[in-house]
Each structure stands twice: as C-alpha cells, then as structure tokens.
Image 1 (cartoon, rainbow, N blue to C red):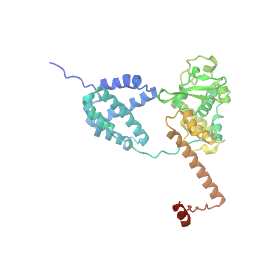
Image 2: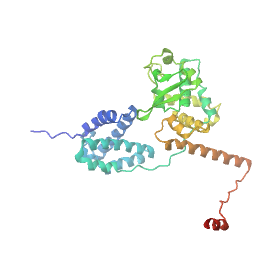
Image 3: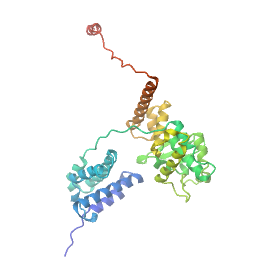
Image 4: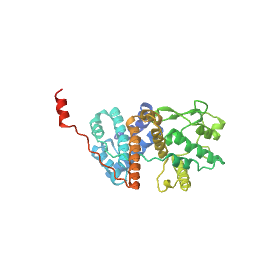
Length: 338
C-alpha cells in the first residue's frame, strides 16, 4: 500500500532558514531568530485554530484570512504594539517570497498574503537623556573592580558610539583600533559594517578590559565572569541597577524607563544639538534612511518647544499669536501688472 506524499511545509521552512535567509539574503543571527519566533507563533496559532498538532499543518493552511486573523490577535490578545505587528508581518512576507520561489503552483495563494497591508502607527518621540543624566549613570560603576571597569567601559562605549546593544556585544578585539585614529568597526543590520570614532576616555576605559589587554583578536570585549559574551537581558539589568544608583545625583531619572537603546537615542540627540549634519548622524548610527534619523530632529524640536512653553508659564508670559502676513491689494495689483 503506497503512502501519501508528505506535505512539503516542513521542507519549505527548513530551506527558508538554511538556504534563503542566510545564504541568499545574508540575514543576521538576530534576524533569523526574530523570523523563527514569528513563524513559531504563527504555526501554533494556525494549529490551535484548526484543532490539530503543528506537525499536521499543511501548505493549504497558509490562507490569507488566517494570516490576517493572526496579525489581528497579536494586538488584541498578545497586546503587541503596531510596530511589533508590522515586524511579524515582515517576517511572514519574507517567508511567502521564498515560497513563491520554491512552490510556484501556489504562487497566487502567497501573493494574497503579500498584499496584506502594514498598519500605520504614530511613532512616539524618541526617549533620550541629557548629557548630565548620562554621565550620572556612567559614573556609578566601581572602577576599582574588574566588573565595575567592564560596566563603566560598556556604558561609555554605548553613549560614545550610539551602537545598538547587539552591535556592542558583538565587538571583538580585532574590531578595535585604539591608537590614533581611534575607532571601532561595528557590524550593523543587514551585515553592513561602519566605523565609529572613539573618545580618548572611551579608549582608556576599554584598555582596562582583560580581553583588550590580552589582545586576542577573536575575543569578545564585553564578557561575564565565565568569559562568555554579555546578553541583552544582562546589560538591561546592569543599566537598571546603575540608573537606580544615579537617582540621588540626577533625580530626573526617577520613574523613567531607561533601556540600552535610550543611550543610542541620547547619542543621536547630543550629536544633533552639537550641530552635526543629519546625514552624518545617519551614517554614524547606521540608519538605512535619513527618514529614520529625522525622528531625532522632531524630538529635539518638540523638547525645545516644551522647554520654552514651561519658561513662559513660570515667567507669567502669554505668547502673542502672530497674525499671518497678507499682501495688500495694491501689492497684488502691482504684481498682476508685471
């Protein structure tokens, strides 16, 4: 008795991760993990909806209505933000593009999924810290200890370079150039590298790290007690600890959610306030588009407006609404006669 051919969904998922994403698209480890998590959530949702095991799902279960319902429940049930919902959608779109390559007979089915629109969202203003607040945090680690030296160097590095936390934790000794011109090579999104200058104080702090002192090119520079690279969660914990310790020095830090990415925002705004051109900041931060960097320009203008309005309120000043200029009829008559 002949067995029915096994549905190729599993084979398509395997080729998506092993062939398409890494070999053809050059996706980073972070991207691969994010896409893996999305498909895992999707397949569990589809299986629960169908009342079967994930292993029993078939290509035919990837219907546009099911995908649309999955994206909706991300917000309604899992309380995901619109940004997260759109990121999940992007992962599914990438998978469908791969399916069109390997399963042309069902291309129309996948094209319907690709047509699902992204959801528009109002991007909140970037949270950032003033220079005094950042330095209050950076000064907290005890530099008389090895771990304190590491934490001080890490915090200073994040503020100096504006690096994403994943970029900072991926830095190895071979990426550092600690003699003039002092700089570091960061490995950014989409496998795009960029060079960032290092301040003298950052260089001095990095030279205290054991991995840098030993000068082993392949070693990560920010490691734990076991010599393994720090994790994102580990850095987030350390930052929360030092923010709490800095509150007596900088009370404005109280009740604020400070993440490693806030140090990246703070670097960007500091560059902007120093008069650095926005296209230079784009390259400094590794943004693909200047439109992303423009977010900091909006944030800076909003903060200036808020500060000015607060000053007016304290000073008891009521700003006068200026009347828009209008040309006089005589002027219009003159211009019309030309």
